[in-house]
Image 1: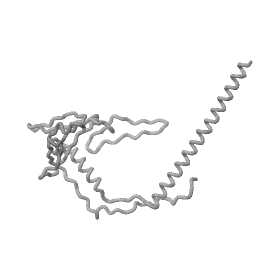
Image 2 (image 1 turned 45 degrees about the horizontal axis):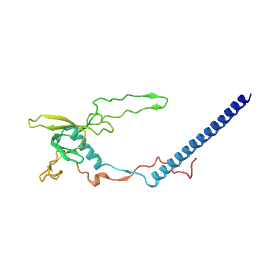
Image 3 (image 1 turned 45 degrees about the vertical axis):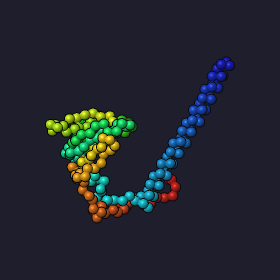
Image 4 (image 1 turned 30 degrees about the vertical axis):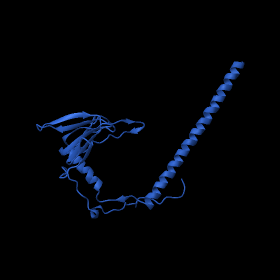
Length: 212
């Protein structure tokens, strides 16, 4: 009987702990919801008082378009391999930019539907490959004396220029050549084309004080 009473007491204590824990978790959830409400209202206030600017043109987009052109067209470039603590170990004329090792020609993922929601697939880059998110190794290429393009694999960092450079083997430094010309030109965006203005906030409601 004593054993049974002890067991009952332990069960009651365990139930009490579980009840308290459940209540605590509920409080944390409510706190998270309240914090989210404050954050959303703060965001609305910023959108009213300091809306993001809307632009008709962007120099950053022009730069990225030119970089994509270099990948797609295979523009003339110069690739330098740099090893930490050693310096420049290899350099050669090349085409376009290095490609992250593990890049795919076809999408390696697939659509997943579950009770947790639908997962969005990553989109292919405009120049036709699926680069991995974080891979230090790269495939690079060299234009050989015969005119053929040779591919090589590199784990040390690579730097590729789309203009002529001169690299000094003694100082281990590269600088722009005196008569350097860009192989892919970037359009310079005129400030008049940018036409910066506050974004349309007509659909944004004035926030009320405090969470609902």
